[in-house]
Every structure is written in C-alpha cells, then in structure tokens.
Image 1: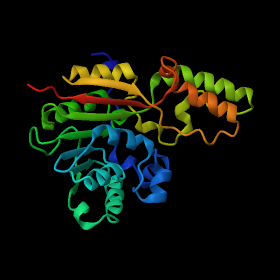
Image 2: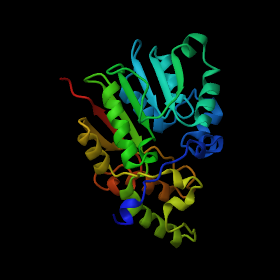
Image 3: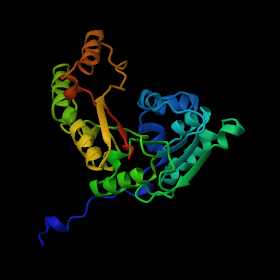
Image 4: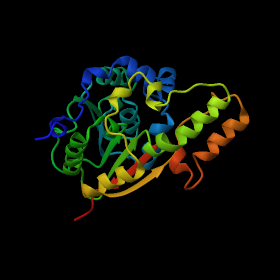
Amino acid sequence: MSEQNNIRPTVVSPERYTREYFEQWCHGAAEFRATGGATLPRRLRIPFNVACVHAGQCVLDIGCGRGEIALHCAQRGAVVWSVDYAPAALALAKETLQHAVPEVRARIALIQADARLLPFLDESMDVAFMLDVVEHLNPDELDRALREVWRVLRPGRPLIVHTMPNLWYYAGGYRLYRLMQQMRGVTLPDDPRDRWPFKDVHVNEQTPLSIWRTLRNHGFTARVWLQNTQSYNYERNWLVRFIMEVLVRLPIIKLMFCNDIFAVAYKPVR
C-alpha cells in the first residue's frame, strides 16, 4: 500500500470550536452579540426563508452553532432537534434560548451528537438544515452524514445547505481582488485562508458543482445557487464598494466572485 493511501483524512476535534470561534469568527457574530439571536444574519435568514417552517413540523438543525435557527423555527411553532458535537456550541445555544418564552424553549431539544450517527427514527423529520457544516466534514464524514439525513428525512421534504467558501472564488475572484488591493497599497495574503485564525477547521471546501454532485450522488434532487451574504460597508470608496456588490450578483460572473453556496435538496417521494 502506498504512503498516500495511508494518509487519513483530517477530522476536526469538537474542542477546536471554542466560544471565541462562535462569538467572533463565525459569520453573524455581530448580529448575535447585538441581539442574542433575535435577528438572523443573512447567512441564516436565506435558508430560514427557503424552508418555510411552520407549526407542527419536526425540524433537524445539524451543527446548530449558537442556536439562532432553532430559536426562530420554534417561534414559528415547530419542534426543533438541535444537534452539535461541540460543547461550546451547545453552551451558547442554551444561553440563546434562555431569553425565549417558556413555550418556545419547550419546543427545542439541544443534543450533543455526531452528524454521522443521528439519534432519530427513520423518516421522522420534515426539514433538515446543514448550515456551515459541509466544509467542516471530510468527504467520508460528509457521506455518512448525508446518508443519515436521508434516513431521518421524510420523503418529499427538504435538506437546506449553506457552505462557504466557493473554491471558484478562491481560485479566481480573490486573485483579482488581491491584485486590486495591492494597487491601492493594501497587502493581502496569497492564500485567502490565512486571513482567519480558524482556517484549519475547513477540511472539505466546495464549488457549486461539487456540492450538487455530492447531493445527487446521495439520491437527492438538488438545486444549488450562489447568493451573497457579505456586507461591503467596510469599504470606504463608494465606487469600489459598488463594483464588488455588482460582481457578486451578475449571472456567470458571480460564479467566480460570490463566496456563498446554497442548496435545497429533496428526498424524492417513492
């Protein structure tokens, strides 16, 4: 057996996801600090709106993080099973739910569990979320997690995914952005991942095509799209800000400039 075949895929320890990660570096941290989860950041608001959650549904939130999606689904009257394997995430989610009224809290269960072995009955869920989970699971882990989602999801019901980065942006759009910034006297790292202290937790970054293929290979009918969730308000030059906002919206062009990948995947009805 070759040395390459002996290399085991990276598995991220749950302890790597600290309070600092969720409170400072996980997208939507500013909204969370300001509202305690009462306001959804755009990254979460888009899939929440797509799901159209309503009273009486059973919702599975895999990788629940700070608990914002669980809170908003329960406020709609759904029963929510929030799963995460990171203790820091579940501790923060518990704090988020403390501000909810008792009848909302009663509809949410926080469970420490592995996405590869979900503790739920077959075909027991109406909606499943995997928001910013895909990129944290190596290919083998992702395959096992998607098989579990398929098992617990009722036929005809959706799995909603958000993942970033878009590797096409890293390969193309970021290079052009870095060059533009150099011309303005701003130095950015050659590898865009070097901008973040938690870059090691991304072990399975995607393109729109790769996530579409993965979902299809697991039997889902899938629609994948790019939709920007970033704010460019930090950019003081209005022209540069305008150009950035246009590039992430233009058809075809946004394949290389938009960094947020969304998908809705349905388990077909027999």
